[in-house]
Image (cartoon, rainbow, N blue to C red):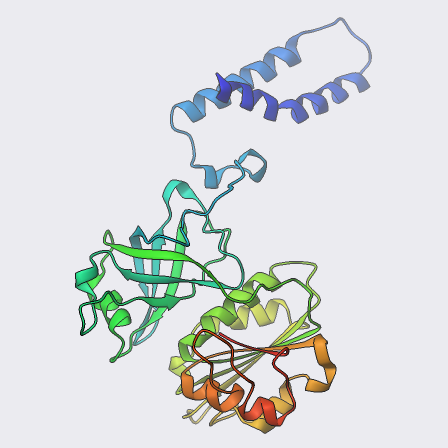
Length: 331
């Protein structure tokens, strides 16, 4: 009965519109027809849902229940079923996991999760301890029913090899999170530089996708993204589409070690000159922020080594250019 009442309450705006339409017509004999029609509509909606209508994700937004909690747990590992695997390139695939009850992850931006095998013994180190690794989902926090990762297979990476070689649709993976990183606030900065390498683009993508989805965003983003070759550039189609959609607020600069004959972009490392050319100067103070995520060697050379879980002092190229610890964040 509660479902029928809910359906009837949803129909109230339609009822008021109907009443207004009838009130503009010439006065006629009173009729209960509008009430009968709305009551029948409400009963029809209720019966439709009771008999197995569409999932909540397919309902209009105004008919969906507000989700209060994430299906993930920041304190405990929970198993999630692998829904599908989509090959991306020669060593990277999209792994899409199913979230229960068609819920959204509600992960804050920016944050990551940590993963381990559902059977701890199946993925362990030399001492027999479960291997745990951090990954940043590329699916937006409000995507219902799915949690998506872009995972690159490394020959020396135990976790990535396990995911690529052992997991098949229907298998489960243990996930814990969110693990909060940087609490991004919309329009907190005028200029944001994102410097990435390889699979380190995922937390940078998380910020970009989140910020640029807001029609009120005013921050201007620049992404400097380094890879070995063109075919190693992850999320290139997504980044190009985002840049095309937001040309005034996003500029993407791809850098490769080895370019093809048709390559016209920068080659080699992300240098001091390249940063000076594309990134807002440190003199802009609190109006500029630099995020960096990539291989340890790249992070160390550009921003200085992280001190374990702490940021550590700014070093490398960014220190030479005058950026402060308040202006730089290392994922």
